[in-house]
Every structure is written in C-alpha cells, then in structure tokens.
Length: 314
Length: 256
Image 1 (cartoon, rainbow over the protein chains, first blue to last red):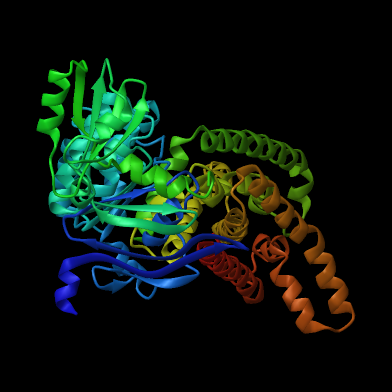
Image 2 (spheres, one colour):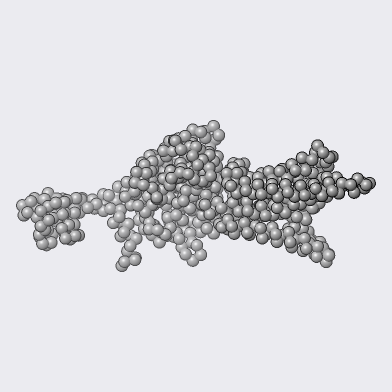
C-alpha cells in the first residue's frame, strides 16, 4: 500500500452521485499520479464539475470512495482536504478584500505556519503574475486578474493536488497562454486536474485525458498514446486538379482514399506502409496540382466528437 | 481556526457599507431614545426628590434604553445575519471555506463569534450612553453591567437563530426575512404560549416555551436580577440554533 500512495495522489473508485432521480456522475474511477496533469473533458453538463466537487469534499458522493494521498476523504475530511487546492468554476473571491488580505486568509484557512505565510504568499503571487497587485481590492480587478487570484488561492499552500475547474474561461488569448504556462509549470511539482471544454488546451498541456459524457467516463488515455494512434497512417492531401478518387486509392501502399472537400482528400495508407513519397511523385508527374500535404493525426477533437456525439446523431 | 474565520467575518462586515449603515441608524435611534428618557427623567425629578427611596437614573433611563436596544436588535440582527452563509453561497465564496481543511463546526462557531463581536460593539455603544451620565449622577453599575450582559446574551441568541436561518437558503433576502419572522414569532408567541401552558400546569412544556421567548429571558436582567433559569434558557437557545446550523451545513454537502 505505501508504494501505491506515493504513486497516486488521488484515487477514486466507483464514484456515483445522483440528484433525485438524475444521475449526474455514474460509477467513475479515477487515478491521478504525482506530477501528472490530467485533462478532464466533456460537454457542458457531463458531470465534470460534480466530480470535482466530490473530489474536493464540497459534495458528498452517493456511492464510492475517494482517497487523497492515502487519506480517505470521507472518513477524515479535514486531513485529506489539506492536500488539495481547488479553483471552482466561479472563483471564490471576497471582493471587499485586497489581494494580500485574501491570500493571507487562504493561508490561514489552510493552516500554513505563520512564519511561512509571507513567503508562501509572495511565491504564489509571483507565479500567478500578481506581484504588483497585492494592495488592490479584488472587486476592482479585471476578470483575468480575478482568475489569477483564484489560481493563487488554490496553490498558495503548496498542495499536492491542484484542481482547476475551467481556469481559462473568460480570459483573453494572452492570458490563456500565461495560465497554460503556469499549469504546465505546476505539473512538475503538483498533480493537476484540469477541467475544460477547450480541446487544444488539453492537447497543449495535459499528460493524460479523460472524457466524460452523460456522467460516464467514456475515454481515458495519455495524450501521447492519442497522438501516436494512427499518426502518420493518414494524410490530408490538397490537390488543385484532382484525379478520380479511384486513381488515388489505387496508388501503391494506399489502402483507402476519401474526399473531404472538393480539393481536399484524406488518404489512408495500408498497414505498416508510408506511401507519402509515392503520392508526391505521382502528383508531380501527373500534374495534380499538389498544394497541401499534412499528416492527419487523430486529434482529441475527433475522439471527443466521436464519443460525445454518437448518441445524439446516430 | 475558529478565530481565523471570526476575524475574517468581522473584517468583511466592516468592509461592507451595510454594517456602517446599521451602526449609524442604530446609534441615531438609540441616541434619540436616550435623550427622550433623560428628558422625562429630568421632568420627574421634583417628584422623585420627595420619595423616600427614589429610583435612580439607571432604572429610569438605562433600563428602558436597553429595552429599546433589544427591540432594535430584532430588526438589525436578521439583516446582518443574512450575510453569514446565504450571501457567501450566493457569491459562491462558501467553496473557499468548504474546500479548506476546516470542520463545519469550526465554520459555524467562527461565523457566530465574528458576528457576535460586531454585536458587542452595538451593546457597548448602547452602554456608553447611560455611562455618559456618570459625572452628573450616581449610577448603579451593577444594574448597568447586568443590562449589558443581558443584552449581549440576547444578541447572541438572535445571532444564533439568524445564523441558522442563513444556512437554510442561498437567497440573502429570504434569509433576512426568514430570520426576522422566526425572531418575531418567538417574541410574539413564546411569552403567550409559556403563560397559558403554565396556567394549565404543564410546567415542562412551559419551560420549553420559555427557551423560545428570548425577550422574556432578557427582562430579569433589566430588574437587576440574575435569573439562572433565564440564563439557561438563553444558552439553550444559542446551543440549539448553532447545532442545527452545523447539521444543516453537513446535510447540504450530502444533498448538494
């Protein structure tokens, strides 16, 4: 057991939560390893927020167990919560306090030793780009800065696990980049769970991804596995003067070809073969007007749409 | 940890205009009531001199003044208590406390003590008015202390009830109205119910009714008495309301 404790910071088994007859989260199993950034995906209403509320002790699960750093959240909530930093969808900010007052409160609530408080607050402000805003009222800050204060609040006590519920909502592109950088940096020392429905965000920063749909966990794998999956086996080819589809499909090493747009084709190679070279030579020789050629990686979007749309559009 | 929450509560209270508005209005009304009482007292003065054992300024000015303050608290406490939980829920800041390594008991006690500290300021301001007469007449400090303690206990009982009602809803205005209705209901029915039950000889039921009539339990303090039963009833009401508040918060985590 102790070995496992050092490996996984959160381990939840059979997590279920129902509101009346509505089952918001159904039998979810979740494991978070130390230093890992886990992307938590799903359409709106899939049960992401409910799951996060359960993991942070804000909501009791109807069934199932949660263990945080080896401590049972339901049996010993106070000890377990000390390891978690949580930024909910709406940052829990007191608008009438200044940033410094607020972060001091957060350190006190999380039982950071008085001597370590100034240092912890300075470090959190530094990381979230709040160094110059310490004396300002939170209510007077812009949305982006409020979001940063929310993140600072979640990391100020150096928790083992940081749970962020849609941290980049409402930010401008520059701020989103900064927050992404921050999350990636956090991933080195903390375990991070990140909920979002912005897919490039997950591909950019997460190590592993879990997709929820209608309260069920429908996909769970590493981003690396996702990218390798089918990577290079399919290319997108743009041809200005395309030949008949059958001609493309008949090329050596090509298993199938399909038309995506009038001048854009998806060409799938036969197993174990890379026919890119042959394709380019043929295109040049026969004057197809090759204008684009790129590997069609299976994107997270494909997986996501595939998994979450299936039931709506059979 | 309780004091962390209490100090936070006090700080955010004083950072909001609501607290200052309530303090100001309270002070204006109490000041006016004090001057009226003082005026009456001075007009009665010639008659009082002829009495063998005349009541002093403390009985004739301070005691009614504290009664007025008690009535004002009935309005002020619900308005201020709505902030405690309901407004935190509405602003979604409750999550900060719920995610922190703190128990529900600590949250409830912290909020109660922070609020009580604010109410003690009101009690102190009320006590200052009769104290300003100290140079002009001989005050009965024992009675004054009794009145202050009584008002503080009454404020604590109101605060506990207000805190509990604040736990029940996420709408601050509903919490304020609910707390006011609960307190007013106790004041109006508690006394009458207690009297009629006692008249029928149901002493246990009458004692229970007495727990829910905080104003009646405040009255002995105004007569300079230390009524242990009244004291116990006030303490019981506080303990009951706080326990219910803790249970309510716990239940909400389960219900969602």
